[in-house]
Length: 94
Image (cartoon, rainbow, N blue to C red; front, side, top):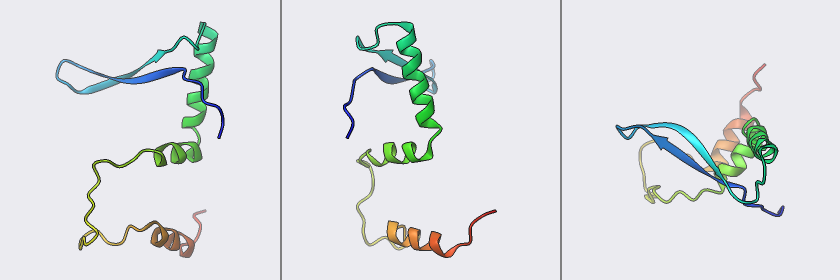
């Protein structure tokens, strides 16, 4: 794994009614000038343009609020292996 450098924190902003209406980034002391802030934001934007990066980033989040009911009867099989099997049998979109 690459070395991680803490460059900031991401915050959601809310309006008076409590609805999320934006995003702010608070940079750390590791970002020493505006050029560095631009580099960080460009790197984030590049990552967001990559579905592989998005998938890897999301997969590191633990589902703390997910239901643990293994005997669910509705919704079908969402096991990753079964989804991969379905994807392999479907023709590629052109």
